[in-house]
Amino acid sequence: MSIHTSHPDIIKRLKRAEGHLKTIISMMEAGRACLEVSQQLQAVESAVANAKRALIHDHIDHCLDHVMQSDGKEAADAMREFKEITKYL
Image (spheres, one colour):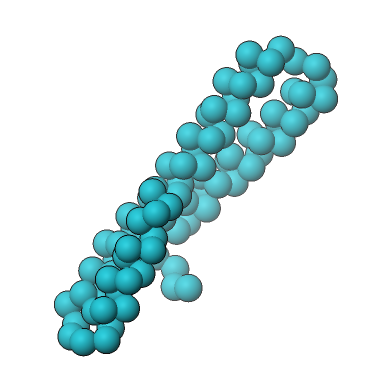
């Protein structure tokens, strides 16, 4: 896997989500209200979904777009990969 300019930002997002998730576990262990925990879980879920979306869009923009300019097998492989990755959006 190659590193793209967006990867450091995505890594930061995921690390923040990781820290937030640890806080949520502590909240549950402390017996915090389910509503509060649910709200925080929604925030983590949204953060992870946004990171995933950014990663996939970056991949499409930088990897697949470049290969689609080529001919033959590389372009066909890129199209198959594009179809595969879209199921994660």
